[in-house]
Image (cartoon, rainbow, N blue to C red):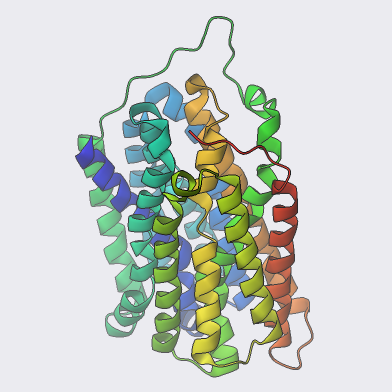
Length: 392
């Protein structure tokens, strides 16, 4: 089981890479194949939307077939094909299709590990284990920062992505060999096992608004808008953008580890999540007010958005505590659907928000983005304030 979980973390590292590498390649893609910032916003959002839509069939497959076949086959075929198509892309449509395939391939990886945690480990450890997977897997954010920038400048972005396609295929093959499926849970007599049964759990409805928006600012800024922001306002090169995105990636990793044990430390999940996300709202507000405060000053605020926006594993632990055991696969993937679907939706909307802002001064478009993400996160916190706290 340990070996299987280790390679699931490697698979999740690939997922983190694919969702965030466009920020570093934005300038090269615009120069080589003529895609625009709005094209890249749509492509990035498409990854998240496809990823989210796949969560319902992934949840069914986890409960029906187990994590081994579900993860190895989807990552092997979808992930490898998507990376190869991206490396051969000649226009924006090719990039869109490649990101959609990558979204399909990455869809089961994190939820497979969460399924194993929920079925094979003590409930009180779920948030810590979930945060650890996110923390180690988020090294993919680092791989998509300076190393990706270096590889793109050294061997070219196409060759660099072909290397990732080969790695993807190898990881999928190893997952087929090493994952051990946990025993399935039988439904209680008379209990059903459908999506509507999950949606009838009232406690989940106060979590869903914050789930939709809590990861979107960090994912959108780290994965897409940090690059254009620094290129347009600070004249940064790919290397300079790589440094800032690396800082944000490190902050997101630290946040995943920091959130994990806090529910046991403070005896509350709701309080930890609410304080953390409100702190993220403050960082976005500061970026809105002071977008030209300096290269590293804004970098630290972006890192704050990443750190405080890493509450996803704690929110998953909160939601999982209301889900019956026989619906584990469908339950965790439903929660993930709202989270990743929210990222995809808001990432797609962020393009029009950016393009519809006044052209002058140049920082106005990015102030509109910071306000957009910050206000939605604040609204999510308001709904979440009425949720029921529960710890294991």
